[in-house]
Length: 107
Image (tube, rainbow, N blue to C red; front, side, top):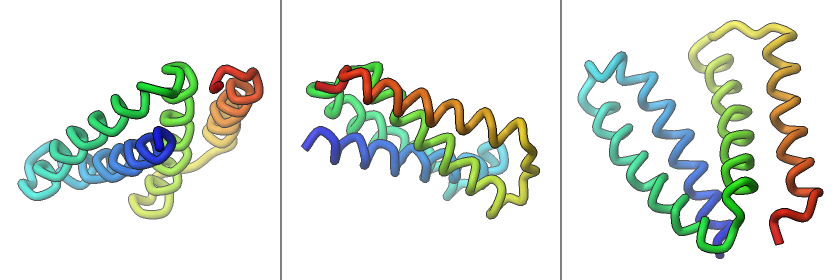
């Protein structure tokens, strides 16, 4: 069940960060409210997931999935630039998460 909480935390973090971008520096009310509510829910689920998942593993997965998905949203939705250094850097983050999980740190 703790993995479901982590997945929900990641989903709310991704949506909240996307809404933060859409809030235009907190000048648009609905995305701003969505940002704050989403982060409250996100951190609630994340804290519950940490009851059983090691912090290092949970945070690494959260970060890796978040950066991967938010990079894709940035590129495809917000038309942000992409270059080889960004791609390689994201791959290193994902490889780090795989390495943490293979190390047996996640029980």
